[in-house]
Picture 1: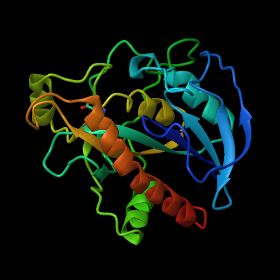
Picture 2: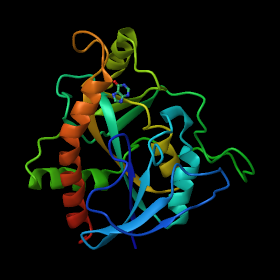
Picture 3: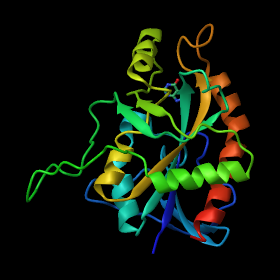
Length: 249
Ligand code: HPA
């Protein structure tokens, strides 16, 4: 049996279309998750929703308890996670309001609790991370986008910065040289922790601004919020369509 969770990021503190059945407050060996888990259904499929930045949106990227969030989902029986993330666009196709399903990730974050394999180990554990994102979930998202006539990027490398500040032009140049198409602040260690607990994980990345230096002038919060508002409807359409097709397989 599979069980799906959606982790909502900036601009997705609540899931439109989710029929709420109950909420679950969990304590974990790693502390408190960002918020209560919302148990509900979309298109008659049981779905668990978690607001990554808390409810209300108050937890900055570097303070999110990623370990507790993922541990709690595992405890609730979750097998598959779709994470939604607002990102900056680096390469040409990644224009504001564009959606990408990344296939690779580079971690530039630091000083975050990034693994479950630290204490009380029977043996030192190194998980494989060749493919950080689950291929089957990515394929289903790609098919759902096609069905909805949404023009998305079906690959892309996500660079995870530390935040909460945005980047300098030089930092974005370096990330581009490294091969990053997108920049966000929450993709890691979330993806790696899910993999450590053997949970399938994929991300829907919504571009909400050009990354530093990729457009004239500075980046404003008004610009980010405007693109979030414009783009989130397509994210919801994609998610809902994904759920319809995923539940039948
Ligand atoms: N940089 C990092 N994270 C982000 C950005 C950005 O430009 N936009 C949205 N999240």
